[in-house]
Image (cartoon, rainbow, N blue to C red):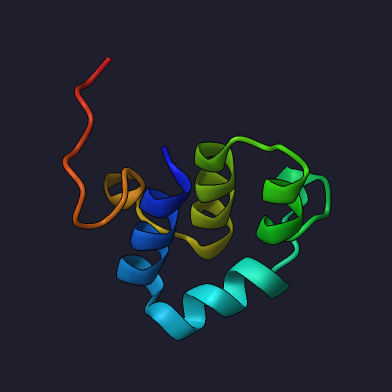
Length: 75
C-alpha cells in the first residue's frame, strides 16, 4: 500500500476531516502507543498503519482492503 492509497482509503472510510484527526491524534496500541503520523515517520509500513487504524476504529474486515479499491485476491 502506498501513502497515497492510504490517504485515499482514510478519506473514503472516515471522511477527509475526520481522517486527518485520526491520523494525527489517535494513539494506537498496535503501533507502540504512537499515532499514525508518528508511526509512518518512524518507518512503519503504510499497510500496517492502515490495518491498526481499522482495528482500533472497528472497520469491518470486508472493508479493510480500502474503500473504493479493488479487493485483493484471496490467499
